[in-house]
Amino acid sequence: MSSTADSHGVGARRLVRLAAVQDVLRRYPATPREESGESATVPPDAQAQALRNVLQSWHPADIAYVLECLPLEQRRLVWQQVPAEQDGEILLEVTDAVRESLIADMDRAEILEAVEPLDADELADLVEDLPEAVLPELMASLDVDEREQVQAALSYRDDQVGAVMEFEMVAIDEQLSLGAALAELRKLEALPPQTDKLFVINPARVLTGVLPLERLLLGAPEQAVNQVMAPDVNTFRAEDDIYHVAHAFERYDLISAPVVDAAGRLVGRLTVDAIVDVIRAQGDSEARSRGGLREEEDIFASVWKSVQNRWAWLAINLVTAFVASRVIGLFEGAIEKLVALAALMPIVAGIGGNSGNQTITMIVRALALEQITPGQLRRLWAKELQVAIVNGLLWGGVIGLVAWALYHNAALGLVMTAAMTLNLLLAAFAGVGIPMLMARLGRDPALGSSVLITALTDSGGFFIFLGLATLFLM
Image: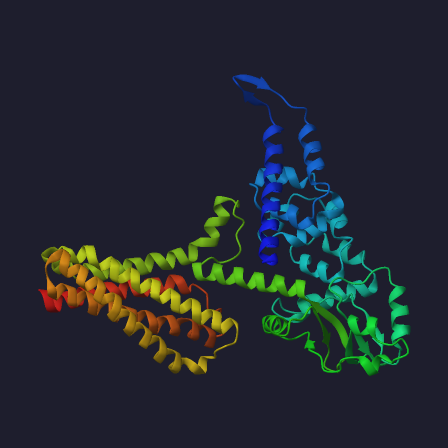
C-alpha cells in the first residue's frame, strides 16, 4: 500500500512542478502579448528570474521530467535557467532524444562544465552523445585513472555489464578485524550510493566474499572480516549480458553486486539503480519495436525527424495492406452477391489480430525472462493452437449465432464460426512462430511483431472467410 501511495505522490509532485513551469511561461512570455486587446510587455529578465526561482531547489529527475514534457522552444527557455551544477545530472536523467536537443543548445564551455562533476561511469553514458569536437578536451581534463575507467566502460557493448558498472566502491582486506574495517569506513567522506555491503579482497585484489553492513555493525569488533563475511556471493563478469544480470537482481533481491575479471579480481560493481534503468530501457525498446518505431523519439521532435523514425514499418504496413486489399478483390463477386460478407469480414480479421497480439506479447515476455527457448517451439504451438480452437469455437459460435439472427442464414453463421476458428489458429501459429523465429535469428523478438501479426491475420482472415463463403454460400 505504501509503495503505491508513494508512486502516486511522485507522479502528483511531477505534475504540480510541470504546471508551475507552464504557469511561469504563460505569465511571463518571452515576447509581447495581447491582453484584453491591449499590448502588454514584460521585462526581458522577468521570465528568466521566475524560472530560476522555481527550479532552484528541484531534484534533477523532476527537472528532466519537465523538460521532456515541454515543446522544443519552451524546453530551451527552461534549460537555459537550470542551475549549472545540475546540468550533468539532468543530461543523464532525460531520454536520449531529449538529451540530443539539450546538448545542441550548449556551447563547448557549457558542456565541459556540465560533465566535469560526473563519475567515470556516468561520463561513459554521455560520451557518445557529445559533439566530437569536445571529446579531446574532455578526455584531457580527466586524470589517468578516470580516463582509463571511461575507456574501459566504452570498450563494452551497451548490452554488457561493463557498460553500466560503477567504479566507485568500498573494498576491504579480508585480514582486517571488524573494528578496523569500521575505522576505515569512518575515514571516508561518504559511502557510495546503494552501498549495502563491502567487498572483501585478498592482497591480490581477488574477491573472496562480501561483508553486509549489518554484520559489520552488529559483529564483535575483534572478529576477523573473513570469519563473518559471506563467501558465496552473486558475482558478475563485465562481459555478461546485462539483461540476464537484471533478472538475477530481481530474483535474488540484490541492491549491489561485485563485478570481477577472468581471474576473479574486483573491477567494479553494479547497483540496483543502474539495473532499474536497464529494465526501463528494455521495456521502452520492446514497446517501440512492437509498434515498428526505429528508435526512441522525442514527442516534440520536428516533423522530419518523426517521419524518419516511422517511415520504414509504415512502408511495410502499406505493402501488407495492399496485399489484404487484393485478397478482398479476389472475392468481389461473392461480396456483390452477399453484401453481409462485407459487414462481417472485419470482425474475423479484428479478433484474429487481437488474439495474435495476445500470444506475441506473452511469448516475447517469456523470451525476455528466459522462461522459454526456441527449442520449445512445438510444445508452445501445441498449447496455443488448443487455446485457439477453444476460443474459436466459443466466440465464433457466439458471432455465428448473431450472424444467423441478423441475416436469417444458418449457413452464414456456420461459415462465420469456422472462419473465426481458423483465423485464431493462424494467429496462434504466427504469434508463437514470429518471435521465436526472430530469437533464433538473433534479432529482437518484439521487432515489428504487432505490425506483422496484424498484417497476417487481416489477409488470412479475409481469405479464409471469403473463401469459405464462396465455397458454401454461392
